[in-house]
Image 1 (cartoon, helix red, strand yellow):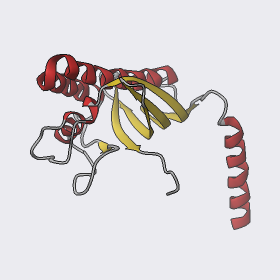
Image 2 (cartoon, helix red, strand yellow; image 1 turned 90 degrees about the vertical axis):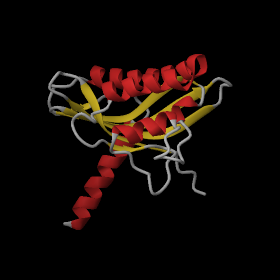
Image 3 (cartoon, one colour; image 1 turned 180 degrees about the vertical axis):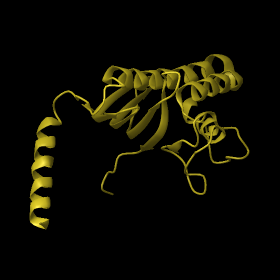
Image 4 (spheres, one colour; image 1 turned 120 degrees about the vertical axis):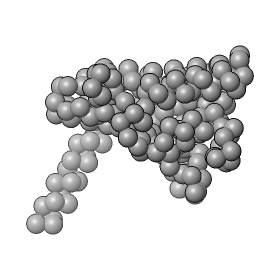
Length: 188
């Protein structure tokens, strides 16, 4: 029995590896959410990150904070309950950000309750490119995994591994309810 499971798993992984070079086509169990909606939500997140950085550069922390709060309220599912948010650059004991307050502190910093946060969204980001490895859609939920490439004003690109989970709310909006981000493993 175990051999069958391992060989089946190996065959699936070989098939998946062969497809990894092709454009991502979502696995869709139910068509309540479309792949286009998921990809649009990802692009909107990237555009919002750039907007927060631009507003900070042009209008200071108050403008950036207002934009970040609007982004969090509009894109994330904190209105549905805790969001499973693990930002890239957080440390114990505040690694995870299940509240909107914690997310805002991560994006713009300057919150005494989160003293280690420096404002990830304030780093002068100018563009975001998303490379999905896989998209899974089922009912009113969707999950994605892949790489996000974020460029700054000097052209330096920071790449992070990103997993997003979305929930379709009662108003028909995709809300981020899971957001895990980490720097790629380098083997060191």
